[in-house]
Amino acid sequence: MRKILFSLSSLCLVILLAGCQQSNDRSCPETIEYSNLLNDSVQEELSVIMSSAGISDERQEIFFEHVDQFNSTVSTEGLAGEFVQKDVSRATYDPYTMQDE
Image (cartoon, rainbow, N blue to C red; front, top):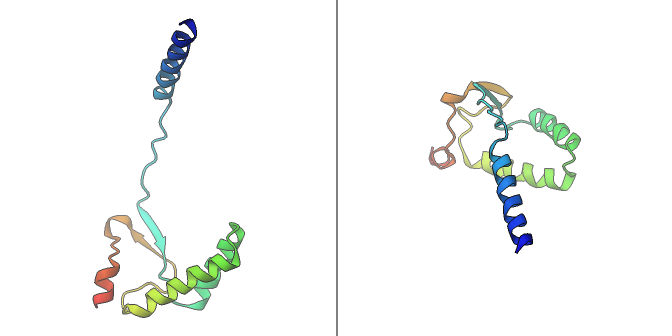
């Protein structure tokens, strides 16, 4: 009985202390930087970043195949070829609307 009471008390203490932890209140950035990866130079730049993050060449190849497939199904008008910054509140992304255009 003492073991059960001790276990329950310990569990309550852990839950109580976990609830008292300082929260990491992270604010949203006001701008984002993005690209639709339309050209080889931007894809190469991203490939270097992905390699330095430890992403295998095979996974990168699959990713860029999906990027090329998507970009071939939408109108490139209005897409960002290079990296650009945009206000988060104005950032919209609706692939279904883009494919219908």
